Length: 116
Length: 111
Image (cartoon, rainbow over all chains, first blue to last red; front, side):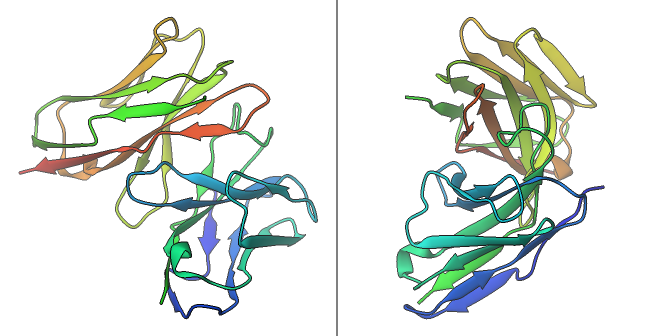
């Protein structure tokens, strides 16, 4: 089974801090994604990557950046955390086309980030 | 605008009963539609995928339907169990485009 591991289940950070969320997958998937999940809203795509050192903006990239130095690892960076970034962050990976056609997304269990 | 709407927002049923969750979409062009199950504190897991030519597909007690003409899908759960309590998310994929997620339906199965 594909395993996507997010380094932290819960994080509490202060406004203005730089925050790193780490994600590792063990199935040699080309594509990796970062989403945020808020109540009443669907998952919203922040950034995605279809290859090492490649990154593409999703729907809500403002205030975030990413890094993919190795195929198995995809990091989300909040340059200066703000309270409106309090959310559940989900990392996912997939084979094949970046939009998942024919290949399901495999998600980690999420990091619940609270910014105070 | 590409959108996916799910109904109801939440649902409570008794163990052993059946239920149906709805997904309406305006995504075009359409490639496929997936249902995901998200247990509390976990990431979503794919239940089934529906392509344009498929009308019905079963996965155990879960049966998904797709009507591409009316742009509707449903997920029917038979003989519900406590472990079915979760959020069910409908995701539509458009060719050459990103995924469009519904907000999900929260199902609670009571004993």
